[in-house]
Length: 243
Figure (cartoon, rainbow, N blue to C red):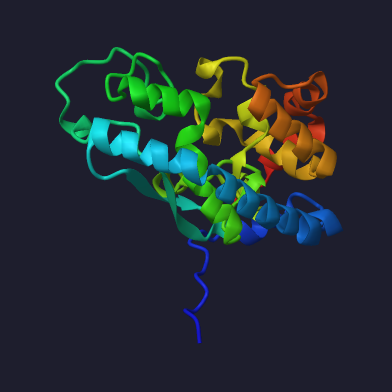
């Protein structure tokens, strides 16, 4: 027998789920997970040479470890260990360089953040640091498209009850918020953009997912996605729910 299923750590999940007033579609329940896993398997196979090259370069330029592992919150509030290529200096916590930026949850997006090397900035800008997360898609922990997985510490400290509704779906490699931010400073912090994640969830479908994936690759979102991200009253009303 396998290990027992992990349970949610947040009591607001059940209440937050109800505020969406939606039943999962056939696409969400069956087709999307199927497409995710097939696409992840193909992409992993194709990208093996590239990932080996990146891993070797990180090892030579930054040293060990090659991967950065961090616990994030997944579907239904269940935590999982997310893996990506390391982009920061191994001694970043003890860095003596001063950075006159905003808080830590924003500064990792800045090209001037002293914690990053030129290699790390390139990997983050190109999203290549997230290639190992295709393994999470293959195993069903993540999806190609969905809200980005949040840190457990942020969920505990910052989330209101209604915001847990973003955890009713699998987190994604890319999402509506990421492709509709006009520049890095607008990306801000994930918990400040929950409205956008909920708009994606209410509009989820094959066309929206394809548009987000294309926008991720080309770096430009079509006007339809921008209008979707700009919001509607029904999503804003979720703020009246408190867990």
